[in-house]
Structures are given as C-alpha cells and as structure tokens.
Length: 579
Image (tube, rainbow, N blue to C red; front, side):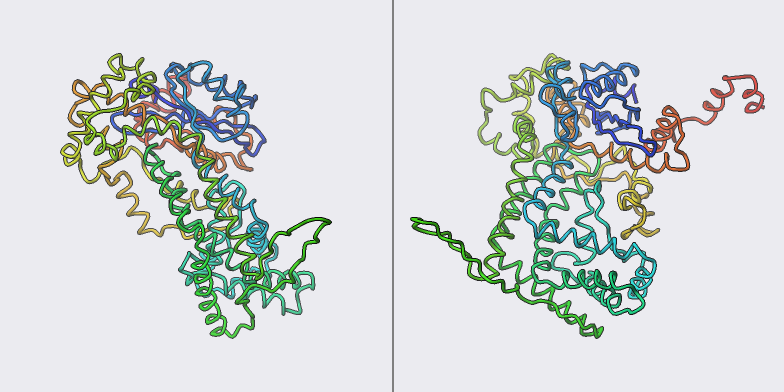
C-alpha cells in the first residue's frame, strides 16, 4: 500500500474511533488515493488510541504516516464526523492538520450529515418521535418473551426469519427506514407490509388469558396506537421522505465516490423534497389507499380491529385574551388542518432546511471544483472563456505537485478538453473494472442488525454468485469526473496535452466524501474481537482486521514467501516448515 501511495504522491485520510469489547478505544485510519486511474480506499491502520483530543488524533495519524514512510505534507484532506475533537475550530483534529499544512482541506462525512438531517426531522415533532418509539417498543415487546415470539411466528405463513420486525439501533443509518418499512411496507406499495400480521399478533396476546395482565395491557396499547389515523399518515410521510433520501444514503455507503456526483445527487434530493413540501393532499390519498388494503386483509382474516379512517376530533382550546389585547391568534378549526400545520408542514420544512444548512459547509469546496464537472462543459464551450478568478483556488492546491498547473494553464487546458469532450467520451467503454471486490461478509454486515438477532432479506445463493461474477464491473456514465480522468489516462494525454488538468482531476478524486470505510472496519473488528477473543493484543488485532478487510492484497502474497519468512525466525520453525 505504501508503495502505491508514494507513487500517487497525494492522498487523504479518513479516521474514526470506537470502543471494542475490552473497552479500548480503537482508531481506524483509512487512506484514499488515486492509482492507475482507480480511486482506492485502504484500511491503513487500526491502532489503539489513548488520547481522544484533537491533538491526540493528530499525533496518532502523523505517527502512522511517518512510520510507513509517508510525508504528512502530501495529505491534502481528511474526512471525519462532526464531533468537537474532530471539527473544533482551534483544537480539533482538522484544525491541527491545517496548522501543519495550510492547503489541507476538511470534509464533513456526508453519511453522518445525512443521518443528522434525519435526526433533526425526528426531533422536530413529538408525533414523529412517538411513531418510531412505538416501532422500537413493539420490536422489543416481542423479543422479551419466547411465548410472544411463538405467537408471532405462528402468524407468519412464510419464512419467519425473513419477517422479523427490525429494531432501531443507535449506530445503524438505515435502521429507522427498515423498521418503518417492515410494518408499513414501501411507499405506495403496502402489499409486503407486516401491519396486519402485527395487529393480529397483538390482539391474540391481548385476548390470551394465560398471559399476565400487564403484558396484555401493553399489547392492547401497542395495537391501539397502530390503529390511529395520525400514526398511519405520519408513517406515510416518513416512507416518502425515506424513498427520497434512501437512494442518496445507500450511494454514500458505496466505494470510489466522486465529490461532484455526490453533490448532484444531493441537489436532486433537495429538489424532490421541495416538490412535496406542501402536497398534503397526496399523502392523504396514499394513506386512504393503505387503509383500504389493510381493511380488506383484516376482513379476509376475520380480525376484529377497527382502524381509524379520520383524525380524532379534539376539543378546541380557546386562548385567553389579555386586557387591552386587540386580537388573538387564529386556531385551526379542523383536526386535519391542525395536523397539517403542526406536523406535516413542520416535518417537511425541517427536512428541506436541514438538508440545505447541514451540507452548506461542504458546498464551498464543491463550488470551486464545479468547473471540472462535464455537465458544465457545454456552457464553457458556448462562452469560449472562463472567469478571471477561475482556477486560482485549485491551482494553489496542486501547484506543488505539478509546477505547470498555474491558473492560466489550467484554464487553457480545460477549454480545449471541454471542446473535445463530446468526441472523447465516445471512446469510453460501456463498463469498466474497479479495484474492489464485494465480499460476502460485507454484504452480511451491511444488512445485519447491531444485536445480531434481526435479519432482513439477504441475497440468495444465486444472487451472491451473480455478485461475485460481476463484482468488479461498473457501468460508465460517460459524464463524470472519473470518466474525464479515465480518458486522459487512456490516451496518455497527462504527459503533454492535459498535464495540469490531469493533476486537477487527480486532486478532485482524492478528496474524501465519507468515512464509511472506517465503519466497515469496525464491523469486522466486532466479529474478530468478541467475548471469546477479548484478550487479543493490539498488534495481532490490527493484523487480523487488515488481513480481513484487505483480502485482495492478502491473496496476492506468495505462500512460499510467508513460509520462508517464518522459517527464518528460528531453527525450530525452519526444521518444522522446510523439508
């Protein structure tokens, strides 16, 4: 890895930390760089951290880089979460790295920001928080007793393993979405929901005389809450929000991301949220569709449950008028209008506002890089010129890696490249190979619940075989920064015609977007260092985790070389291994 990074020259770091089962703080250091046209993210080190301050993390990262012969001055950027020890303005890790290298850039992990946006939406309204609290309580209610689980499984006609209710874990980005979809189904597709099954199970528990009264009362309360119209329509609102933010969330958890592409998807997500920001009527129609299908299924199974079809009428509260007060605030007349104003409008407004405000810090970097986006090439060709201050920021960042990368040279090369792009992109292949293998343990981990109890629909054996056959194949969009860089390398134009522009694209692709690779390494750490292997030494743990995560490198190692290396350790090993 060090040899490739030295050849690439510029690189970025992604760091995060977690506690293992022995309550030791383990820090994952991932290096991102561009090598032979591929964006590569490697787990470089998993090291115990004894100082979690910004200065402590800086010292740890510098020690890891210098011990492997890497120059910290070539570290162009970092990606971290939003913790104070990472983003602190004066003493945070990013501030310390910028003090070391003034050209160093910090990018707040996009996946963490999106998760915070969803948290903002939930915290904005009590009805939203109570809905997900209800879903989590129902999941915990069934798991607490084998008797309840037996009733639950007896109600499932299909494989019960595929139809378990999802718990909402604190560290899983997709947990809320999956928990909601398990019970209410996909937006506008409630056919696969477990809503009626859950109602039926709770009713059977409620009417079972052999179960203690407290449990039966809890089952009744959960059932009544699920039957409330306001909870059902709130669920439909969040299903729509998740249907818009879900693709972005899943894309941000893939490898080899492009910063400009991520921002295109982000802008599209915000536009979609704005388009439904005041469309309350459509949500009512979707809720009515869900209710109609649910009632038909309840009747077919002869389940005596009365689903609310309208908002509950609540007595209107009159606000006292104070002395000499000339007017009072108008109160909504109908419960429907009250819900629309106090819940729907609030949730949608917070969703749009949080998406704009939370990602604002990262947008500043993207504005400077947007000129390299192929989507802007047509406008560049039409104007046949670039602004005077264009490329100055980018030139200042990459001039030390390429002395010819002045702002004037970059503009000249970009104008030429943009005018030829329509013809050049035709030479790109429809697919290309990546350097990443989609290992089975990663598939399982991405879908495995935190407590190891719940599962969702894992790929079957035929799907896994297809994945393995196509694991390195990606479609070429022919309209992104990766495609531009690929064309420049393909025809060796980086040696003459577009030398400075090639460095600019390499810099852009080296910038980190998320720290998902760190999270993946923590998942592997959880499996390797468990309660049965809780005394692993730090050095051995690091070796095992790196070998597991970076299997593609491990598979290239010659077994004979390993045997000879071990045999050289002692005469006893030599006698046992070499014959």
